[in-house]
Structures are given as structure tokens and as C-alpha cells.
Image 1 (tube, rainbow, N blue to C red):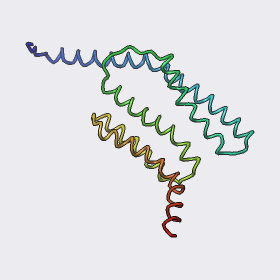
Image 2: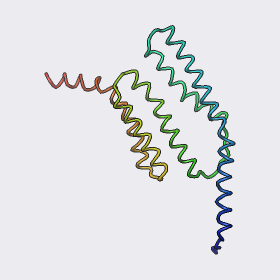
Image 3: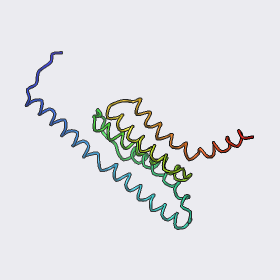
Length: 172
């Protein structure tokens, strides 16, 4: 194929049109996900507040937050039909940010339920940063390490259930 050299004006026009297309596509598809996840979060929060008032137990109502990812993804599949097309840099970055936050939102109630301190929360935040950075630089290995860090924070709440029996067994 023969390569054509573009003038500065043509190059700027191409870049401007690509930016405008991306902006238009994102603006068009932006509303539904925010509405779906926002209304769902408010509904679950109200349900959880009612459960906290009537159950008088802080930890019982934390389990209801698991409704959000299950119902949220089902609603996204049902209502948010997007046209297929190539993903660009912005798509990749936003996807990484929201996937990291989504995984975190799913496991955070477990960490809070079994009360293991601040350290797992810090690991989660660092994992989100790692996942986002890896998406920006297109490194799947580092992205996997970021998700592994996020998921490893689940070890802390359950460590006492694993380590204390092991410690007791070894001291015999």
C-alpha cells in the first residue's frame, strides 16, 4: 500500500475529528450506566438503611451490597446496548478505573464484616492504582498483579480463622 504524507492541516483535522468522534460516542453512551448504577445504589442504600434500623445490627445489612454488582451487570446487559467498535485509549482507561472500583466494591463488605483493619483497604487502593496504570500503558501482566493485590486483601479478614487454628495446632 502506498503511504501518503499528510500536511499539518490535514493531520490536525484528522486528530480533531477523532477526538470529536470519541467525545460524541462517550457523551451518547454516558447517561445509561450512571443512571443504572446510581439508581441501583440508592435503592440498595435505602434498603440497607431500613435493615439497619430494624435489625439493629451494623454487619447484617452489609451483605445487601452484593446485590449491586449482580443486578447492575444484568441491567447493563439488558439496557445498555452499545455499538461495537474499536476501543480507544479513553475507553481502556475508564474501563480499568471502573472495573477496579467494581471489584473493590464487591469485596469491601467482606473486609468490613470481618473487621481486619486499615491495611487491606490500603492494599485495595494501591491495586486500583496498579490496574489503572497498567491499562494506560497496555500491560496485562501488571493489570493481573493489580487485581491479585485487590483480591489478596480478602486474606486479611480470614487470616485469624486460618492462622489461629494453625498456631494452636503447631503449639501442641
